[in-house]
Length: 309
Length: 280
Image (cartoon, rainbow over all chains, first blue to last red; front, side, top):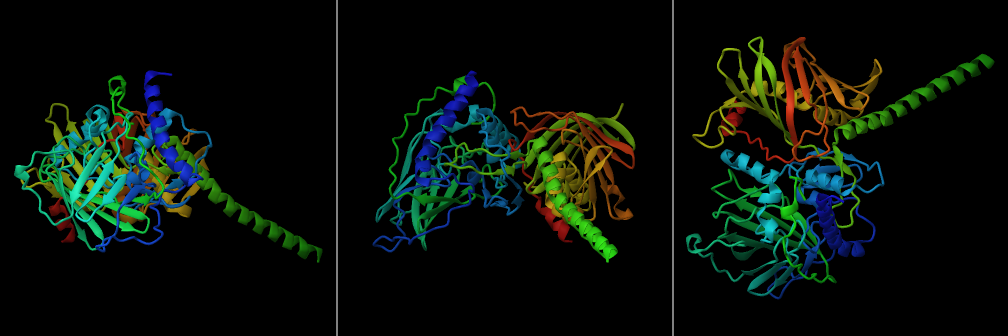
C-alpha cells in the first residue's frame, strides 16, 4: 500500500472507530441526515432555565467531535429523493447509489472533500483576503493551524461533547483526537453570573477567548472575545481570523436535542458578520466520554499531495 | 362484428403502446441524465466522518474555478486572451476575468460578473464592496447573457435538464443522444439543445431564444478533451477545450489549464450600488 494511502486508511479507521460508538446505538444505517426531531420534555434547573447538562453528539457530531460532513456544510438530505441547502433553501438533486461496493479510500476521501465544500453558507471576507482564504483551504494540509495538535478554537469546536451546568457557570468539554485531523482537547468554564467582559485591550489572546454567558429566554448565549489568531473558525474553508474576532454562540435545548449556531464578527477580515448553519446534537443519556486520544502528530511530514482529509 | 373487434383491439394496442411510450420516456430520461451526471463526476457520496450512515448520492457541484488561454472576440477580431472564470450554482453566479491583447496593441483587462439578476463590471476583484477599493459598474441588462454562459457549461446543462424535469426531452440525432429543455428564471424562453457523446459527456450546446429581440442569447458551444484538471484531484471530468460561437462566428476559443471544484473560496457579493441601480 502506498504511504499516502496508508495515512488515508489510518484517518478512515479513526473516523470509523469514533462512529462505531454510535453505530452500536443506532442500529440500521441512516439514509438521511436531516436534523433530528426532538422528543421528550426539556428538563429545567432549580432557577428555571433549561438544563443543558449531558453528553451531546449524534447526527451532527460523534463523540470525538468528527462532524458529519454533509450536515456540517449545510446540505441536508431529507429523503431518498429530496435534499436542500439549509442556508439558501435551494434544492439539491439526490441520486440513488448505483453500487453496493464500498468506495476505496481515495474515492471516499475525494468525495468527502467535495461534499464538505458544496454548501452555500460562506463568510464574506474583504476582497483583499479572498486569495489568502483560497490559498489556506487549497493548502490546508500544511496550513491548517489545528493539524499540529493545536486546539480547534471557537467557534470551530462547535457543540461541546459534554456540558455541565451549574448555578453560576457552565462547563464545556471538547475531547481532542489523534489522526490526520488531530486536535487538542479543549475545555471552557463560562460564567453565567452576569459579569461583563474584560476590556479587549487588557486580554492576551487565547484559543477559546474570554467567554461570558447569559440567558435570552430559553437560549444560552455565550459571548466571546479576546482570541489569538492561531485558529480557523470552521472545520473547512481556511477561514482565518484576527485577534479582534467576536463570537456569539447560541445554545437552545428542545427535549433531547441541542441546537447550536455561532455568529462571527471580525472587523479586520470580514465584510459582514457570518452565522454558521445550525447544528443539532442529540442527548446521549447513557454515553460516557471516551478517553481523549494522545495527540502526537506524525503524519503531516509524510503527506505528499494537497488532497484533503 | 369481427371488424369492430379488430378495430377495438388495434385501438387498445395503440393505446397500450402510447402508454408504454410515455412510461418509457421517464425512466429513459432519468437513465440518460444519471449517466450524464456520472460521466462528469457530479454524483458523489461518502460515509467518512458520518455516524453509521448510508446516504444517497447528491449533485456536489457548486463553485468552480477555471484558468485557460486562447483567443476571444474583440471588436470583430480574435485576439490573444488569458481567461479566468469563477462560478457557482448556489447562488447562480459567474465572474469572467479576461486579459485580451491584440497584435501590436495594449492589453485590455475586464472583469464581468453576474449573480442571479444582478450584473456588473469590476475594475478589480471585489470592486465596489469596500469604499475606495475599485469601481463596480452596474450592467444589469447584461445579466441574461452572462448567466447563459453559466448554464451552457456541461455542469449547468445537466443541472438545467434535471431541473426541467419532464420538460426535458431525450432524443437521438445521428446516433448521438440529445437533450432538449427550456431554461427558467431570468432565462425563461431560452431552449437548450445539448449533444452527448458515447461516454455521455456534453460535447455541444446550442441555445435558442424565443424571440428575435433576444438574438444575443443564440449561441453554440463545443466542449472536448475531458479530464480531471484539478491540482487536488477530484475525479470530476472537465473540458480542456471550449469553443463558443455566436451567429456562426467564433467568439471564444480557450484551452483550459486548470479547473478546480468546490475547493476554492469563491464568493459573489453584490455591490450596494449595483443593487440600487437594479431598483431604478
